[in-house]
Image (cartoon, rainbow, N blue to C red; front, side, top):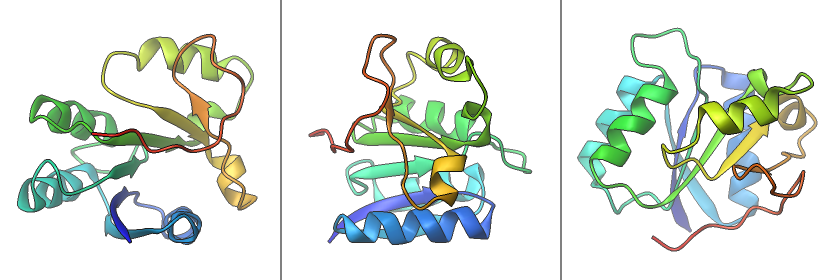
Length: 139
């Protein structure tokens, strides 16, 4: 099983995402906020996690977006998936792709698709197809 870092303060979403990625051959380690996620990343080393899945907005001092900037600055080259409720309204995906470009995010997942236990992977490029199959990039 490949290691995955799951960063989300919501137990329900975290459990669904954990189950989904276990089915793909990953074993997850969970952090409840960006600070804890960054600490785990530092402890394990930049090459440990094949995939990092994070929420962007969490009720903490370090949200997911800040954590992502720090881990990429530290040299992380694995796959990054962002799951957020912010992608669930019309036009949000395009706006998010623009606003979040350049910080190493590979996929966006609307959390409504997580609740359906069928995560919808949206590529970060503006002209990517609407939904893609999850594929881990080589790091």
